[in-house]
Length: 93
Length: 198
Image (cartoon, helix red, strand yellow):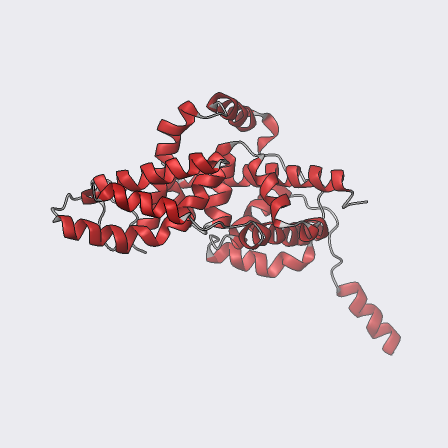
């Protein structure tokens, strides 16, 4: 009996899709989610479907990684002191 | 959300002291971000210095058009972007024509909106150092580079970007989408050349 109930569970579990038929739209939505620009409906759609499609799961992690790399890894240089001084000197002329 | 800049700014009358006060309080805190934006646009330190200086002097000259309490950073970025297009690009070492042509070609190509998945692994990007990511970014045509800088590095909203760039929000969204596809291609080429995916 245990075996049969397990089999039923397996049958009911949805396999993760390996192909995405709407990937162009999904990519746009994933980017808007990561940018904090998605509306409530899109967020809910994302929440309900995120773990069902392998191309979308991969895209989400890749887009997130690139966004974070740009934000955290790309060097930010402080504005040179000389430039600040030059601007202030020009204002006082 | 506060307005970034109104369409018809109300001109104010300020004393010199008030002008300097607004300049120091509202504009100067953004100078590092402005310098980085200028450096990423021009990819040259001297040109970035000139562009930031020009922008701040213009901001001071037109300070009466700025409404206190509104988004000073976006206001300044818009002036810098316009200075870059109008003044700097003309004398740039990189002719603007190349960039415009590349942008137009990409916009008009049939597959611009197609779902083209770039074969790039998250692990490959995680392994890259900042300079490698920056080089990929710098290799993009300037209009595409700009939207990525504004969104992912500076954290502007789509609405703010639309006002900075004088384009509709829908164009911000599609340009960003295309810019990211191009960036992924550059990152993938780099990962391939370094054998990251081997």
